[in-house]
Length: 74
Image (cartoon, rainbow, N blue to C red; front, side, top):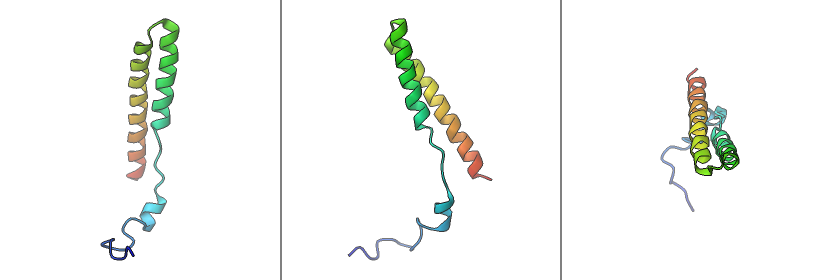
């Protein structure tokens, strides 16, 4: 039914694709936002906590991304 859709068979499903296991930084982003929200509520300013938590989470997620790219380059 869907024959001929892939220009080169095995392009996406080759051995190189199967070996790569990227790290995930989304958990750190989510955790930092939740921790920031709880901290913000405890100090009486939830928006400040959300913003600080989001900034810290983005920083950690970007760091994880850079570390993963460096490992992939080896």
